[in-house]
Length: 399
Image 1: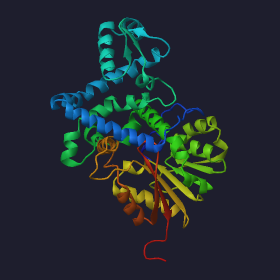
Image 2: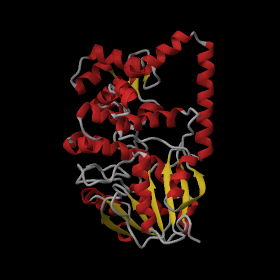
Image 3: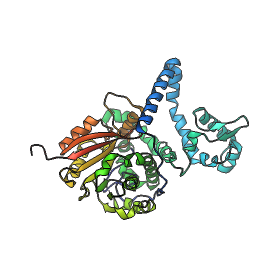
Image 4: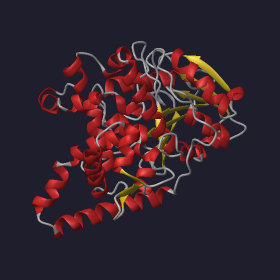
């Protein structure tokens, strides 16, 4: 669930989110967006990793592989404490023993040593013969505020509410009802509106994940042909700011809830593009910006079922002129193809949203056609997402 809803009832400040006034979130500095590897390199590495894991599983007793899978929640719980105690930050410049870390964090040294030693066994941190812990390439990516940090997403995915929602999986399999509806009796957006602390954690996580995609999205060729781009449900505007920084002649419209736009003003100013962005408040279930030759939606559609997606796309078509461009960032996932990142994201959508899902390019093509768009091209992005380029065409039955 990288980006989220745009409804009057919603309340969150994620990149690609919209709703009521959000809890404040850290603005992104001009250096917040990390560099990205070529998309083919990331996807090749992912396929190689999957192959090696399958090979290792075939070489090991199945019980050992299943032990690793069944205890994944234990590792997640330990990572939760690692980020809450800010262990990677404390190890940023020096190696420390568990006793030294315990003095700084107020926990017991023996238990902390045992937990961190288990983290080392999972590939996070290093441990030397003298009992000193130090950062490695994984734990460095858990430091607070570091460029490319994954600290906030780890904090979100291991949060109490996500843990509780996943406890509803048996009910979802029986009824199709999402975890928030089962556990809390409301949608995820309404629950965040009533829980601002959790909302802030979620918003920071989504901002961090959008930062990983921003540079690759901004470099995509379709933006070169546009003059005025509307970022629909664009949250704090991090991705839009990167697009504008890479395309100096492009003007932007950031469309989201008023409270989210308050956060966006600071971020856009920090990234030097505030003068080129028109801020507009609203809900994409009611309307989208007009006067643009392109509209952009990042990870919006996967939060919703087909009926809601058709409503969003219909409003986009009404807001674009004939020949206008619609750009969608989504994690494409074919029905009968397993992919670790996309498949887990899809199931998280199933649990955390109201019947949201990851879709294939064909499923999205059919939804686009029903609302007056023709899918023109699919552009692979660094990592695991894709940019779908569609053009506004006459309604079916009209020349």
